Length: 130
Image (tube, rainbow, N blue to C red; front, side, top):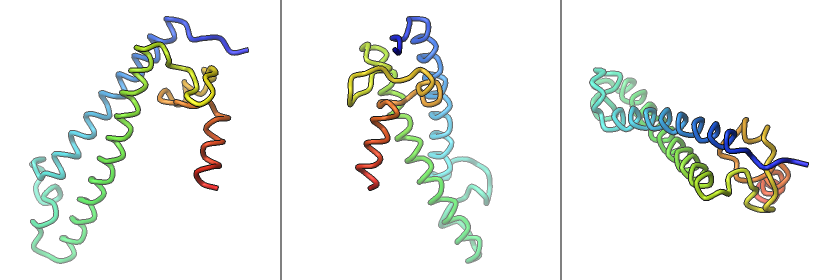
C-alpha cells in the first residue's frame, strides 16, 4: 500500500517545482525577447522581416516560428507547475485527480507535475488517442 507523502517529501517536491518554474520562466523570457527582436544578437536574432536575402529570411522565419512554438509549450508547462504548487498548498498533491488514490512516489519523482496515476493516465491516453 502506498503511503501519503510526508511534510519533508512535500517540501522536496515544492523546491523541485519552484526550481523548474524558475528555469521555465527564464526560457520563456528568452524566447519572448527573441520573438520581439530585443535580444541584441544581430542578424541571427533579427527575426522575420529583417533579412535581406530570401534564404536567410526563410531561415529566420523558421527560427521565429520555432521560438513561438517552444514558448507556447513552455507556457503550458509553466501552468502545470503552478497547478502542482497549488495542489501542494491545498493538500491534494500526490492524489490522482481521477481516482482520488495516491500517485506513486516514483511517478512524482519522474514527473512532479503529474495529476493522474499511471493507470488513470493510460486510461486517459487510450480514450484520447484510441
